Structures are given as structure tokens and as C-alpha cells.
Length: 220
Image (cartoon, rainbow, N blue to C red; front, side, top):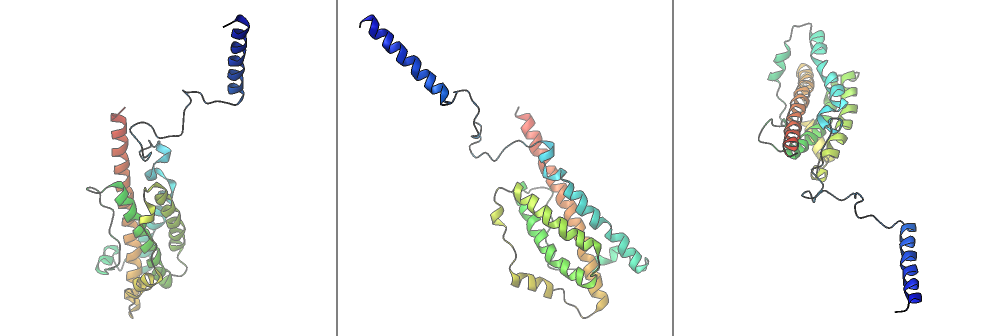
């Protein structure tokens, strides 16, 4: 090959390199958005303290509202009826609490969403007896926010479906009682049990997020 031909090929190679740089060709070591090795699903992303569900301010807002219920109850009945007396007024449709152990985080989140959906319907009975209740108004607002927050943390939020209109009607029909005093006690017990449902649910979620954080730190 003659020298002029060598110069021609050298110029062509340099021109191609310049064109690639101008077009923004990817660099081999550039970071990508794909999941890290060993995590093909991308579901096990590490969460910082601000990303934890248990540290959301919504918990303080909704628990702050339900926590006021005991005082309102005692003020209404002037301590003539003990707060613990509400245990005698069972509500069969109350959802189960999120278990503190032997329960996955996903299962706990699903139970929380299902339970909050049921309590949202049961609140109508409370509002019927106490139409001016500020606690009910606050709980209804913060329940919607908490449901949305929990669903964003779930891997399969679609597995929890909304209650049908017939299911909602049945929940309310089960609470029907001709006795005004018993209706009031039932309404108060719904708020009382809602507070414990939220409190135990937050504790269970906090425990699972701590375990997950400990396992992530041990793997470093």
C-alpha cells in the first residue's frame, strides 16, 4: 500500500471518530437506569429514612385525630360510662389488625388498605350519629392520603380492589339498631377500634422496615 493511501485511511478513521463524538455516542462506563446486578426486578431498592412509610407525617395526623376520641367520649358521658365499656359493643365487620409477626410486609400493606377501605365506609355510621364530628372529617381526609401512600409502596396494589356498592350497603345494614344508645356506643367503638388498627399497623410496618434496613446494612 502506497504512502498516500495510508494517509487517506488515517484521515478517514479520524473523521469517523469526530463524527461519533459529535453525535454523543455512549461511553462504556456511563451509568444506566437498569437494575443493579443481582436485582433483576428492581423491587429491592434501598430506601432512605425519608422514603420509609412508617416515618410519613400522615400517621401523626390521622393518629392525632383518633387519639382525641377518648376525651370526647368521656366529656360526652361525663365519665358515667367507662371508655373500656365499648368493648361490649362488638362490630362483626371490623377488619383484622396487621399482625406484628409471621407476616410479610406486602401482606401487611394489603391488609392496611383493605381495612382502611372498610373503616371509610363504617365512618358513615359514625357521621350519622355525630354529623358535626371533626374527628370523622379529619380521619376521612387522612385515610385517603394514607391509602394512596401505602399503595405506592405495594408491589401489587391491584390485588386490593375497592368495595362494591352492595358490600358497602351490607356493612352499614349490619350496624342498624333501633336503640339510640346502642347506636351511639357502636359509633364510638368504631372510632376506638380504628385508632388501635392504625396504631398496630404502624408498629408492624415500622418493624418490617427496620428488619429490611438491617439486612441491607449487613449485606454491605
